[in-house]
Length: 425
Image (cartoon, rainbow, N blue to C red):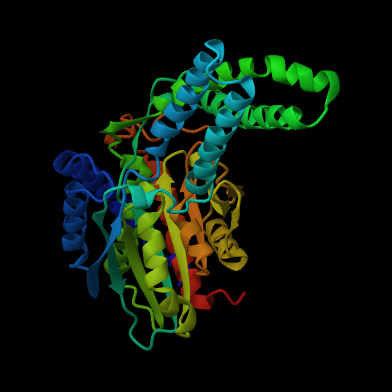
C-alpha cells in the first residue's frame, strides 16, 4: 500500500483525537517532570488506550537523576561568580597575589566549561552521581505482523516535559536567549583563555603584552561574572512546561501510528510496528539511552532490520524537516533511513521538507544513533527557538492541527514504504 491509498478520513480522525487527548492529558495529569508520578500516570492512561489496538504493551523501568542535566547551571554560575568576586577582594586586600587569583579563576572556569561540554553538548551522564535517582518508565506498544518478523519500525516520542527556560519565556519579543547564552558561553571561554595566558606570562617573558595581561586582564572577568548571573537564572525548576507540542505531539504521533493502522485494517505480512513512549528526554535523553543499551542486540544483531523514527514537536509547519544531524551537529543519523523518510514525505505530497541539523540541543534519535541503532528525527519547530519552547506557553491552545496532520502523513508514508522495501533502496 502507498500513502495515496491510505484512507484520509483515518488520518483526519486521528488528528482530532490527538488534539483532544493532549488537552485531556495536560488538564488531568498536570506537570510531567521527568520520572515523576504525573508522567507515569499519563503513560498509564496511554497504555490503556493502546491496549485496544496493540498486540502487546509493556513498561520498562530504569533509574535516572532528573535534575542532573541542567541543575549544574546553578552551581557552575555561582562558582565562577564567587571565584571572580572573592579573588578580586582578596587581591585588593593583598591576601593573595594577582597570579594566584588568575590561577583560581582559570581552574574554576575550566571545570565549568568541562561540565557544560559533557552534559549539554555531549549529553553524558556526567553529573548524575551527585543527584538523587528516581524511577523512570518507558512504554512500548507493539503491532505484530501476520507472519515472521523480518522488519521492525519504531515511532518514538517522549512524554516528559521541560523545566521552564526563563530566557525564552521573558524574551519572546527579541532573541534574549541567544544574546544572554552567547554572552555566558563566550565570556567563560574568553575568561579561561585570558587567565591561562596571564598564568603563562608569569613564567615566560611575553614583553609588553604579558605585562598588559598581568595588569589589566582581570577586569574582563567581571564581565564574565555578570554573565553568570543570567546563567544562574536560566532554568526555573519550579515551573514545568505543559509540553503540549514538545512533546505530546511526538508522543501521540507514535500512539496514532498504530491506531491508524488498526482503524484502516492494515496488517503487514512481515513488518512489526512499534510505538515507543520514552521518559527522561528532557533530563538529557536518559530514557532513550537506557532503552538503546538494553535493546541493542535485539535491534542490531537479531537479523530483524530495525529503524527508529523519533518525532519531536509537530507545530511550526514551515520548519517540518528530516533532522539527519543531531546533538548540536555532532551526530549524523542513518543516511538511508533519513532518505527513506524524505522520499516518503515527497510521496505524501510534501516536497518542501529539507535535511536539517539540530544545532542547539538534541533529540532522542541521537541516543539511538550513538548506540549504533538505525534512527533519524522528524520535527517541526522554529529553531530560533519557538516562543513556546520549554516554557508555560507550550499548552494545548498552541497546537497546530495542520502541522500534526502533515507530520502524520509523512509518518504513515514512511511506515508503508519501510514495509515495502526496508532500507534496501
